[in-house]
Amino acid sequence: MTNLKQRLYRGGMAVAVLAVAAVPLSASAITANTTINASVGSTISISSSGTVSISLAPGAAAVVSSAFDTVSVSTNNTKGYALTLANADAALNLVSADSNNIAPHSGTHAAPTVLANNTWGYAIAGAPFTATYTDEDNATTSSTLWAGVPANAAPVTLKTHNSTASADPTTVWYGVRVDSSQPNGTYSDTVTYSATTNP
Amino acid sequence: MKLQRLFVGAAVSLVGLLLVSVPALAADAEEITVSPATLKLEAQAGQTVSGDFKVINTGNVDFKFKVYAAPYSVTDIDYSPNYTNETERNTINRQVSFDITEGTLKPRQEQEIRYTLSVPADAAPGSHYSVLFAETVPESDSGMVVRTKRVGSLMRMTVDGERIEEGMTESIDIPWWHWKSKLTADILFSASGNVAVDAATSITVKSLLGRELHIEERTSSVFPGYPRMVSYEWGSKWKAGIYRVEVASDFAGEEATVSKYVVLAPAWSMAVLAILVLAGLMAYGIRQIRGKPE
Image 1 (cartoon, rainbow over the protein chains, first blue to last red):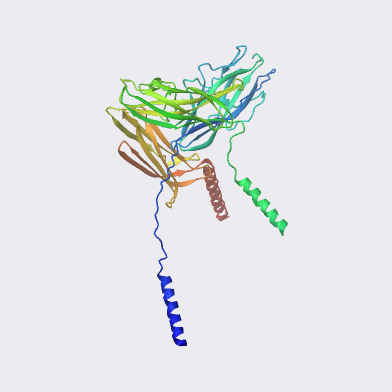
Image 2: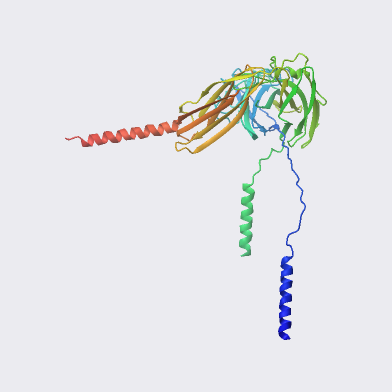
C-alpha cells in the first residue's frame, strides 16, 4: 500500500511537472510602429562684437589708432558662405556732427598701404595685409597696411568658407590716422557685413 | 580615506568643467539668423508665388531689424557676391513684397515673414536670382564705426519654359610642385544655356603607400555666362612629402578625373634639404682632403 501511495505520488508530481512545462511561455502581442521625423531647416547667422570706438589725440605728429571687430558666421548649409564688407552707402567718409570729414584711405583689398594723414580704413591680418595687428593707440609711427572700405555697390569679400560653419570668426580691424589739422569731434560712418550661402 | 575621495572627486569635477567648454556668445553679442538659407522656387511667367522665411534672434540682446529683397550676382570666377548690380537674370527682387518689413526681436524670439513674388509675364524661362535680406538696425550711439549686419536667404527662381542646361569642364589643374604650405587643385567650369548647372567635385589625397589622408566633396552651382573656379586646399605648414592627388568632377553629364603625384615642399623643408646637401658635400670634401697623400 505504501508503495502504491508512493507511486501515485510520484506519478502525480510527474504529471504536474509536465503540465507546468506544457504551459506556453510566450504570449501573443500586438505591436504598432511610429515613425519619427525630424526636419532640420537650413539657417545662416551673423554676429559681431560690441562697439568699435577709436580715440585719437594728435600732437605735433600725426597719430594712428585702431580697434577690431570680430564677425562670426554660422550656417548648416553644406555649401558654406561668403562674408562681405561694404560701406552702407556711397558716402565713404567718417563724418562729425559739424560735418567735418575723415576721408577713406586709398589702399585697396588687393593692394593695401600705410594710412595717409586724415584717412580711415580696414584690415584683415595676413597677406596682402600686415601679418598681425594689435591695438594702436595714438601711435606716431605705424607701418600697418590698410584698405578703404568700399562703397555699397562694390563690396569686398572678406572670407569664403566652403562647408558648414559654427561661429566661424573673422577679425576686422579699423584704423584711423589724423594730424592736428583734423578738427576735433566725434566722427562716424556705417558699414555693412553681409553673409549669404554660396550658390 | 574619506578626505582622499573628496579630493579626487573635486579634482575630477574641476577637470570635467575645464574640458566641457561650450562656445558661447559674448555677453552683449547681437546675432541675427534667417531660415531657410536658400529658397528654390519654380513658377510660370505671370504667376504669383508665396512662401515664408523666419528671422530669428539667436543672440543675447534685443535688436531691431528690417527685411527687403536685393539682386544677386557674382563678380569673378571665385563667385564673390554682389547685391546691387543688376543683370538680365537678377531683377526679380523688384517683384518681391513682404507682409512684415520691420520689427524688434528679443533673444530667442523669431518672426515668420510671408513673401510674395509676382513673376513678370515676360520673364525669360530659366534661372533667376535674388536674395531676401534680414538686416539689423543699429542703435544711434554705436561707436565710430557703426556696423550693420545682414544675412540673406538666397533665392533661385526657375521660370517654366524651354530649359537649356549646358556646361563644360574647362580645366582641372593640379600643380606637381607646391612650395607653399598647402597643396592646391583648381577646377574651372563654364555654363551656357538658361539654367544654373550643378557641379559635383571631389578631391582625394593619398600617401605614397596608398593611405587616404583627405577626402572632400562639394557641390557648386555654375551660372550661365559666369565661369566658376572650384578650388581645393589641403595640408599644413608642417606637412612635406610626395602625395597622390585625385580630383574628380561630374558636370553637365560629363565625368572627368585627373590623378597625379605631387610634391609638397614648404620653405622649411627646402631649407632642411639644403642643409643636408651642404653637410653631405662638406663631409665628402673633408674625406677627400684627408685621403690625399702628402
